[in-house]
Image (cartoon, rainbow, N blue to C red; front, side, top):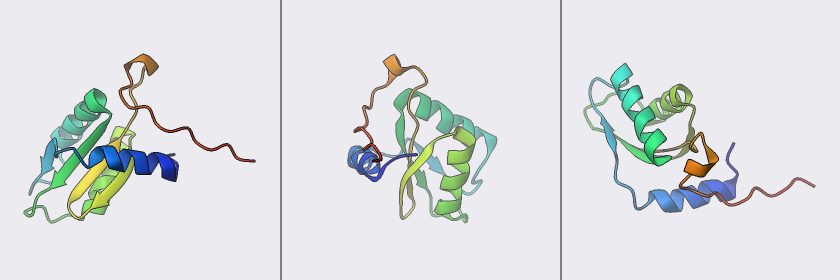
Length: 104
């Protein structure tokens, strides 16, 4: 789970990103899930666009993608979804999140 500080940091990074994948009228296909998984593996933080011809709700799509790719939904703005998943190996991580505050 991301803290609000970490989420804010990822949102600031995502502002500069363009969608790497666009979801169209076919909506959630296994190919889309595979493409999103590969993109997250390579980049850790990605933006996904939901095209106008897609009739599904972007929030539902975001939840499904996050579940299938084991990633976190950072934010949903209109028809843009931002997903984050750290690289499996610590040495491969490109994004260093702010430390979570310790519970007292």
